[in-house]
Length: 77
Image (cartoon, rainbow, N blue to C red; front, side, top):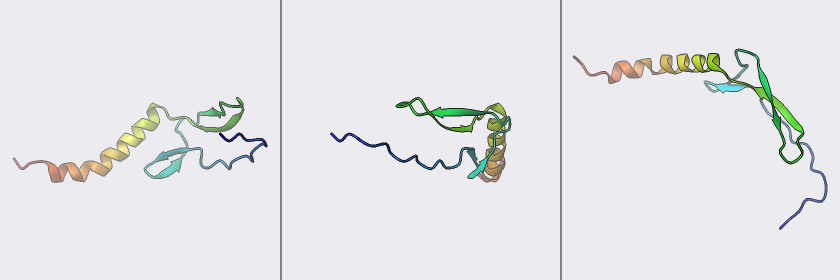
């Protein structure tokens, strides 16, 4: 077993927004929540909080993107 004897350098925090449609975007509400290091109880960073409005925008993107698929996959009458 290896035990750290010195404090480690702080890691660099990457994007803290929502990843929607392969893009980092802010939440519709603008709400954020803290991410806590469980070992030290220190705040690591704040990240965007998704809610129903964000889900609706993802559903819209998904339905728009899949619309051609439904047309192609619908059996002829």
